[in-house]
Amino acid sequence: MRRPLVVSRRWCRGLGVGIRAGRRAFKRVQTGALGGCGVSVRFLFCEAFASSIQKLNGLLERLSHHSGHTVLSVKFKGALRYSNNEYKTAMTPTTPDLLFARLLGRARLKHLQLAVHIAELQSLQKAASAIGLSQPAATHALVEFEALLGTPLFERHARGMRPSPAGLALLPLVRNALKLLHACAETAASMQHGATGLVRIGAIHAAVAGWLTQALPVFSRTHPDVAVEVHEVPADQLLQMIEANRVDIVLCREPQPLPEGHLFTPVRADHYVVLCRNGHPLAGQAHVSDDDLRAHTWLVPPLTGIAPAEFNALCVRLGGAPRTCQVSSRSALLTQAMLDSGDLLALSPHHFARPLLEARLLTHLAVPHMAMPPLGMLRRAASAADAPSAVARLAESLLAWHDIAAR
Image 1 (cartoon, helix red, strand yellow):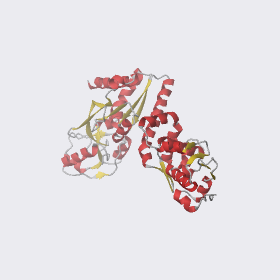
Image 2 (image 1 turned 45 degrees about the vertical axis):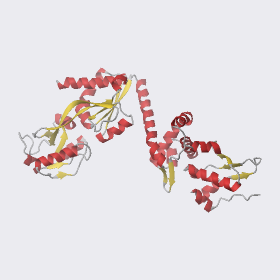
Image 3 (image 1 turned 135 degrees about the horizontal axis):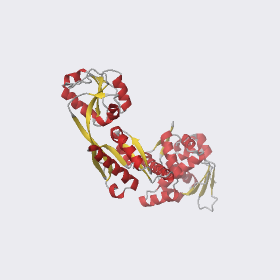
Image 4 (image 1 turned 90 degrees about the vertical axis):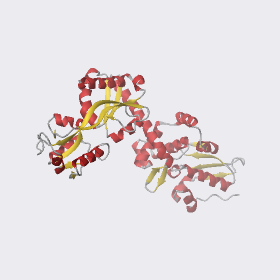
C-alpha cells in the first residue's frame, strides 16, 4: 500500500505556490480505485493554479510519479474538465485554422474582456470586479481561455499579474477585436436613431481647425442621415488608429512611409506662420527682419512630427538659436495663453491657428513665406469602389468642398 501524498512546503515551493494554497488546492488522492487503469484526482480549484498552465502540468507529473500510474483526469470545482489527453492536446501547437475554429466554437466575449482588464489592472480580483464576475468565475474563465489558446497569457508575481510573452503578443489583437465590436455597436446604435451609416474620421488639429470646422457643418446640413464621429489625435498616433481599423477616413499630412494598401490625396495647401499676441512689439510691422526674430523668445515646437526640423531650419536661417520658452504643446488654446502672457513668438502651421487668427485672438508677423506639406485625405486603396455609401458621400463632399473653396 502506497503512502498518501503529503502536501509539504517543499512540494508547494516546487510548484510556485504557498503552503496554504497548496493544501487548499489538493483535496484528495485516490489510487487503485479504477480497476488498476489509472488515478482519479479531485482538488479544489484555487487562484494559485490558475496563474500558470505549467504549474498544472507540474502537478500532473508529480501525481503520476507518486502513484505509479498515468493521471487520467483532473476535475476542477466549477465544471471545468479536461482529460489528460485533452489537456495535452490543448497545449499542443496546432494549425491556425484549427485554433480559429476552436475559438469560434468555444470562446466567449467575456474571455476577451477579462483578459484586457487583467492586463490593465494587473489583478484578477480587480478585473473580475470591473466586469461584474465573481473571482472564482473569473479564474475559471481565464484558465478556459488560456486552454483554448494553448498558452498562458499571464504570470503571477508578488504584486499581482503581468502578461506572459505570449500575452504581450496576443493582448493587442484582443484589444483590437473589442474595439471593432464597439464600433459595430456604435454603428448599430446610430442606425437605430435614423442614421444610414457611421463615418469615423481621424484628424490632426490643423485638419480639424482649418478644414473640418468649415466643411462638416455644410455636410451635416445636406446629409442629416449620416452620423460622423471625429477623433482629433496627434500625427504620431494616427498610424495606430489605421492599423487597428478604428477610422474610415484620415485627414493629415502625407505620412512617410505611406501605410500599405492606402492612398493619400493632397487637398489643402498650408504654410508656416509666426504667431504672437496682438500687442507684441513686432505686430503690425510691414517687414520683420531676421535680427528682430532672433532677439525675441520663442515657444519650442512639439517634440514629435515635422515641427522640430522646421524650427531648426529657421534657427539656421536666423544665424543662431534664439532664446526659448521650454513649453511645447499641440493645444491651440494653450499656445494662445502662453503667447498672451508675454512677448513670445511661436512657429505654427497656418491651418492650426486659423480660428484664432480669424477671431483676432492672435496675429502673425510679416515674414518670408515658409512652405510645408499640404493637408490631405488618407484612405484605403480599395475604398473608392468598396466603401460604404456614408463613407463615400463624406469623402466626396470633403473633396468637393475644397474645390469650391479653392476657386
